[in-house]
Figure 1 (cartoon, rainbow, N blue to C red):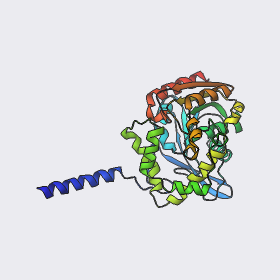
Figure 2: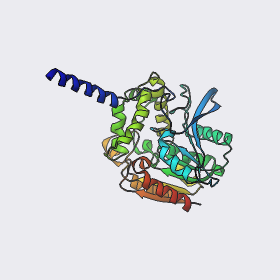
Figure 3: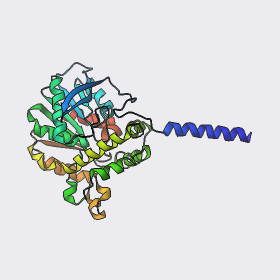
Figure 4: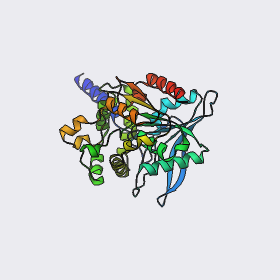
Length: 334
């Protein structure tokens, strides 16, 4: 009997361990199921033939003739916008959500000069190919930095701008965060695991409160680091971390002409590089209630909506509350 109980315990333990273990995905997220049909846009960039993955979802309600472009964050993919795509398409919008070059289901070039200007150019090329001349652009986290750069570079193409807990509302390097080389960042990226991703998201995205549905997005990321192409995944992530740190856009918020909605989770304390900063510097970084209000003041047409109880990813943490505010805000920006 004891042997049976022990065998059963070991079997159950192995099953639970397997359930918690990250999947193994390819460099272009092969094996992960996107919520909508994934398409590929071919482009030549920096002397290379590349492929940019994207979702293009038609309006499910009577179409309002408007297009929304969703720009993902650094630790996110187009798939993470799953709930937002559903809500927006059911509200009459066509929704386009790309995976940027270097991320998720798109090409992972080793020799590539990553910049927000380049990613904005790639996004514009995709939209032009899809016949979109003007759109509402929504960017989250790193995607907020990209959305701001896109709005500055292509003002005629942006009907409305929405920034969801964008990083880069402060200049970390100017604040005293030491620079880390791409080689140093790469070594850190190679240590990324399911547990480290979950711990980071638990702290910054969800204010210490975990729900089982968040695990899908942890597995999405961890699977690439757990797959056969983890070196190029880690290398691109190191390159884009350098891009985020060295290319602040907050100093140019005054150049954004489009009506802009800032949706800010007040519990967010995201500050790339803070872990390597002196304690006195780190403590002063990532104060999103203050940063959101300061950013709104810099915008020519800025509207701030705060979620004091939410973290870095309000569209995942509290989708009903977030999307109610988003749809209301989009109507107000008309």
